[in-house]
Image (cartoon, rainbow, N blue to C red; front, side, top):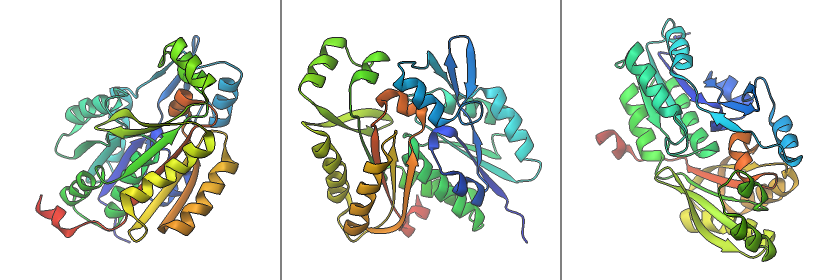
Amino acid sequence: MRRQEIVVVTDSVANIPKNLIEKFKIEVLPLYFRYGNKTFRDGIDITMEEVYKRIEEGEIPTSTSQISAGDFINVYQKLLKNHKSIISIHLTSKLSGTYSSALLAANLVSPLKIKVFNSESVLMAEGFQVLEAARAARAGESLEDILNKLRYLKYRIKSYFTIDTFKFVQKIGRVPNIQALIATKLNIKPIFTFREGNISLVKLTRSRKKALNELKNRLFTDFGENIKLRIAIMHAMAKGEAIGIRNILLEKFNCLEMIIVDANPIIGAFGGPGLMGVVACPTEISSEILKY
């Protein structure tokens, strides 16, 4: 069997299910949680369930930390012993210094062999980019062709999120107390997306039901019912609702792949239990991208 020349690296915020990480041999580095004086590696020293349990009990991480350049250097050097090149894909640089750490490490180890890519997103909006790169690498595509695909895809993947309460956003200082109180009293449920790597508010709804419907409606507006899609549903302790959304989306869209996954708690801490997100990635990539 021919050795795969290109290996894909990412961070734990990409939220890719374990079976797909193993299938495509993706190297995943964890970000860090900090509770008081103790530091935990995401998904290694502490599980999603443990983090969400702490959040429900009112214990928000005091901070989250980016992956260090030293962590990347160690992994890059190890992988280059058995692979010709590395594509390292990471969460938006607007929310974390992880992309910068990866870039610094790549320049120190081998800038010609390691290409670092800013997904400008999080969770499975990042994860679908990672998976596309991993599929292409396994198929033997060139480094530049894979990078062209990523440049094409990252602006065509659509993601939308809602939260069930402003309580957790308020606790980490993202929304002033008075605004959070008013939003809670009025039962306001916001819809967010990512634009140019930043979280952006796209709509306010007046009930949980309307918010969940809006997630589905946004995807229909973006893609219609005929485009073949890979879709992911991410939730924070709301699996029943996620399954309900999945069933509707399977009827409404031309789905090549459907994934339900617990939302990575580094992002979930922002919205708390009840956070729900949908991501759709088109499966057909124009041949014109190779001319970029």
